[in-house]
Length: 158
Image (cartoon, one colour):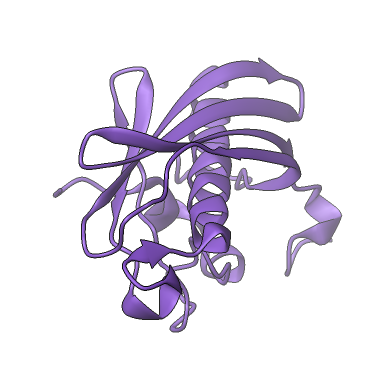
């Protein structure tokens, strides 16, 4: 994809997350985009993300749903405020609640597709429902309640 991902708009001081931080060399560095009213992320776990040979570790699946959903929450809040994603102050979200249902074993060695739908935007809270699929089969479903990071928690802010 040639357009910028949601995570590409995060300022440097907010780009260190293991799942979505572009400045975390050991991280997943996921990339999420709008596709109509849904968000989409394609990611292929690495061999070290194995649970049992051939299948992904559940923690990676949860991390993908979590970070894709918090990125979607930020993008949805920018949309709700009719703002560009590079406008200030930056909008970042943390997970208040993460619920994941593991429906099928998730294979390694294939791209995983994570799709998010915004269920609610209300004040500093955004709820996102996501699915994670492999080979066109939904392997996991999740819901994230994301809360906007207070300015006092943002490095470099007062």
